[in-house]
Image 1 (tube, rainbow, N blue to C red):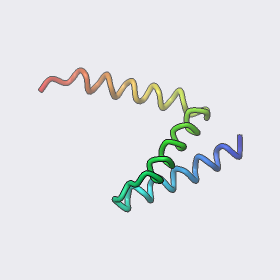
Image 2: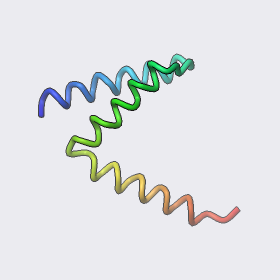
Image 3: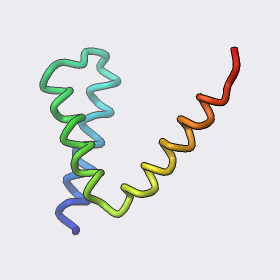
Image 4: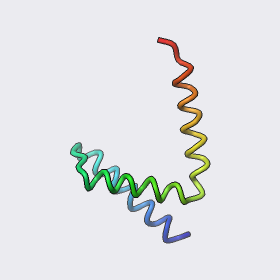
Length: 64
């Protein structure tokens, strides 16, 4: 558990640096993809999933 959390934190830091740099390359996209896989295996996965579902419901309910 401690190893996966430290890997997740490292990947979050790398993803933020890549996004702030403004040049998202293939290697950067792979880091972001790995971040998603590691987040899916943590205890935060249900919270992230419910947050994304709530956001999608909110957006789908908006009328232009």
